Image (tube, rainbow over the protein chains, first blue to last red):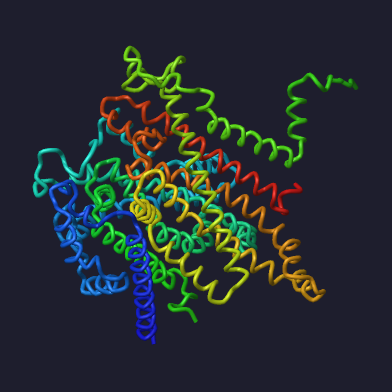
Length: 329
Length: 292
């Protein structure tokens, strides 16, 4: 029974993913084919002057640019289905390889940031909610509201100024010390370069989760069963532990997995500030240097990333709340 | 028993009490006026400041913040406060324009989805879902790139990506009002659809729209700044706030912290002012809090 449910759930999810990626494909294709960017020009770049009009026409014909739009779309879709995302112009490598290697670099940063923001946000939210109206609560709220409206890249910039320039305890850029080959980088050097970008990235997520957790805990603390527990002489911390925590965990986890989307966007900015060679930095490169295959590949990958996050959230519900079954009723 | 009579106009405590006794409505109105004045001040500041302070003064290069230059000076001796105000004014105008277009799209699609229902509703909800399935910044970069970048690119990208939540709110509001008893009653009494729209829908949707629009501004401005910061937005010749912050990156390691910190604080204040304005307007319009 359990296995059948799981299979149905997986099939539903895969179907939805296929539909979603299809939608993203149509959207991206329409957007890029109406754009004023000339693909031939973007491909040739600075050597445009040395290439005659005939040769340009040849390239356009070779690429099928003279075909009608729907047939070009089908061609492209066929290639995508075979797993061919094309070749990145900036990195001169297949797009899938660029994304794989860049994502590996980003993944550790994303993971640290994700865990940090989740744990800190939950802790701050619990403290603020339990001490509603106390000055600690006000302080946490002020902090969260200020963070929620401060630009990510500026926060990263501030951290860089404080920790790398003033205190000189963090490196100012990149993923490794200058002049060290990537295979010779030790674990500590790696962590040293990873930590500040990860902290900068985690700061985005904290505000949202802290404020939601706080509100939810306040709702729980005003409920009848907590009133009853209080009347029995239960202490505040035990009430939070036994009555509050599970009730709070569900919305917190939903938010935390949904924040993967924002985390991915944030990593673009943070990696730009710290010159960290991850997927976010590759996104900026692709856009600035008109690397359309790479940009499209990253768009697909990010959609997959966000979708995976949401699916993981769905999978975690029945573990936290036994009343919820996979795939609904 | 002694009775002390204070002259009510003069003592400051009394004034404070009178202010506190002001009902919440007046306090909210005061906050709205204050926030609006602050933001308008930033937007129109370039016309009052003119070009003064923006010329190169090599004798006053790289000065830390002081009374003469509150935000310090940059590597060409230009006053950073004036540059920041110019840049922020530009960013605010770009953000306001893009957010307004976005609000129009959101309202139109939200109304269409809520009123027509059926396949129109399904298609619009589906588009919203697709938009939510991509990281916002990636979507912004893709659109800004596809339409050719530059100022036009930023405005189009921000306008095309911020309407989704407003469309959802408006759709929900229309659906809710449509199924309410008084709308049913109006229908049975033979009122026309136009009359119902005018007397039952508009009063509900206009406040939502106004608050939604104002709460869109901070997002739009932050995203405009982010796009300019990574170099996809406004061109470096138009020193928007994002460009100023990106430039400061090059001077970080030399210890000129004020180049990055001060313009960022100004941006943060502007964003907070919009949030504040939106929240106060919401509490003014929301029937639950407006009479308090």
